[in-house]
Image 1 (cartoon, rainbow, N blue to C red):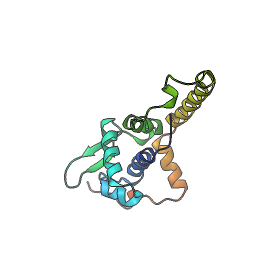
Image 2 (spheres, rainbow, N blue to C red; image 1 turned 45 degrees about the vertical axis):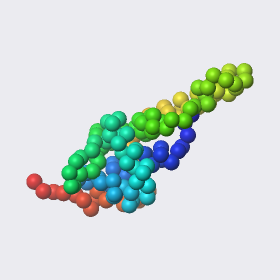
Image 3 (cartoon, helix red, strand yellow; image 1 turned 90 degrees about the vertical axis):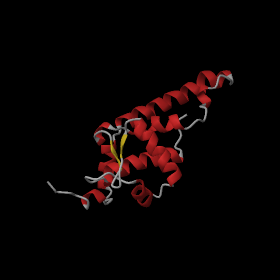
Image 4 (cartoon, rainbow, N blue to C red; image 1 turned 60 degrees about the vertical axis):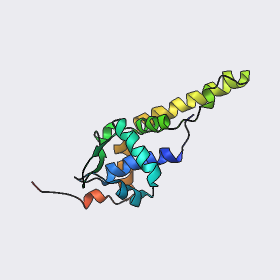
Length: 151
């Protein structure tokens, strides 16, 4: 079942933070924690899962951190949702075989249809779209202060 867990919110905020605030240098996890207030225990687990899924790329070294693995217009919220859902081990009540006839033939199919509609919307929503929303809301981007014009 699609539910808005803390881990899911943190994952979306993390990718959005990296996309919105990254300048030419990778974003360090400490910066994300400071800006978003995401606890380190959630952040590290989510970052590693997003790297394994090809959403983020990890950069090693003293000035390392994380950056997007592809253009922000090519990363969808739906993709992030799927990564986090694979981390969360809770069983989906829709997939359980037991239940009443009304539940099995009416309620669960309705819920499955609604989930599919939501996922389709999330698959159409890119990180670029969220960055544009953040800009429209007047949220300051640290990328503007980190511009590097060295050649």
